[in-house]
Length: 165
Image (tube, rainbow, N blue to C red; front, top):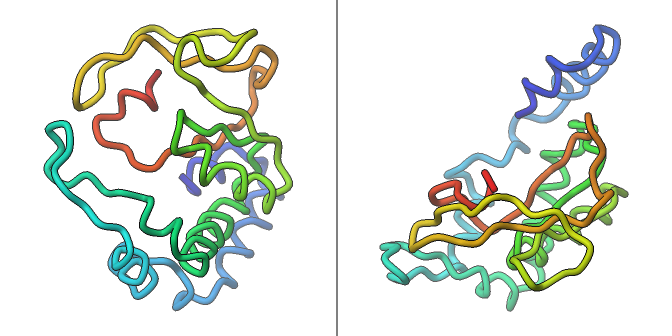
């Protein structure tokens, strides 16, 4: 979160970031139930899928370039103050939103892939998702160094299984 990021900074850096946040127009913040969220939700259908009662299909906003751009802009605005070193996209929907956000923030992007999809990787342990268990996710060797701040992008967090992998 933004507060965690501020906590990790030295005092002068923290003051600069806090001032930048303070100058932000409160009306421009993207609230969970605000007008931007309602506009986005209007093009994202949901339906029961694999035991998930409300599975949201991000394919809806992919057909609406203005909404897709708005989503990218919201992420960029939200995370531009966090000083991340890189952006990782979780297989496979994180590959849709991750690259345009990384480009806008001028940060490197890397993929976290399912086993057997990418060479030269280190893999996590198996993990559980809302509809079963997965073998693990692979990250390219050298994509992240100790101490790096990484923003992970996926389409949703249901059980947190993939994110914890």
